[in-house]
Every structure is written in structure tokens, then in C-alpha cells.
Length: 149
Image 1: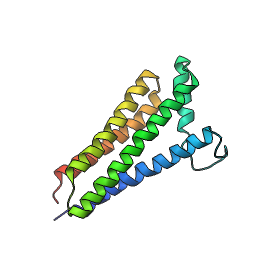
Image 2: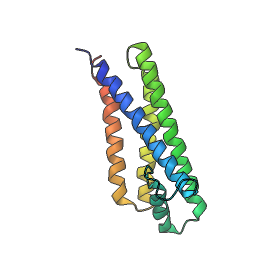
Image 3: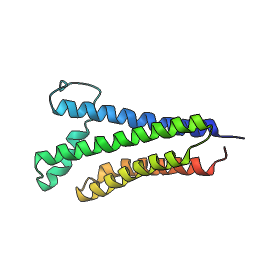
Image 4: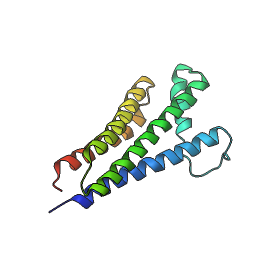
């Protein structure tokens, strides 16, 4: 039995999820810049979380903006790479592992960076959700490699 559809579904899930995260984080950035109204509902609230985290060390406000921009750029790269992996896998009628591995490498590195940053900024409650995302993506990658089809 082939699990091709399941594997394509995994790639589509992560491509869509990263795209949604980029959209909600970008909206949050636009709220912080007062381009979108403060009550805009589709926004992540992650910029506020970054400000709270960096406040532990009295970091300058520009650092929050740089960190958040870096996160959005990194997540955007992940979204693009997952869409490319999906497109190449559909076109080739099988998982395109070079593109897939690259997408997961970028994604797993992001969560690794978050986990390290949360240790540095003493954000232990947030760390568990990022660790779960890291594990979910690692499990997805293993499923893509180990399941038949």
C-alpha cells in the first residue's frame, strides 16, 4: 500500500501552516507599525511576546523589531521551501527529498533557535510549544522518509 497521498498531505499541512503563521506575524508587525488598527483580529501577538522576553535584559526597542523581522523572514523562507517541496513532489509523483529535506532543515533550525532564545530570555512557558513543534516536524520528516510510497 502506498502512502503517497498522506505524504503529500504532510507537506501541504506544513506549507499551509507556515503560510498562515507568516500572515499572522506580518499582520502583527503592521499593527506594531500602526499601519493596521490595534484591534485587527488576525494577528499573532508574537511581537508583544518578543518585547516581554527581551525586557528581561532591558534590551533596546530596535532589537525587538530586528528579532521579529528575522523570525518573519525565516518563517517566510520555510513557507516557500515547503511549497516548493510540495510542488516538486506532486510533479514528480513522489516525495522530492532534496527539497523536502531543505524545507525541514530550515524549519527545524527555526525551532532550535527559538528553544535556545527561550533559554537565554528565560521564557520557559513558551519553550514547550516550540519543542512540540520541533518534535512534530521531526516526526513528519521521519514519516516521509520511513513510510512506504
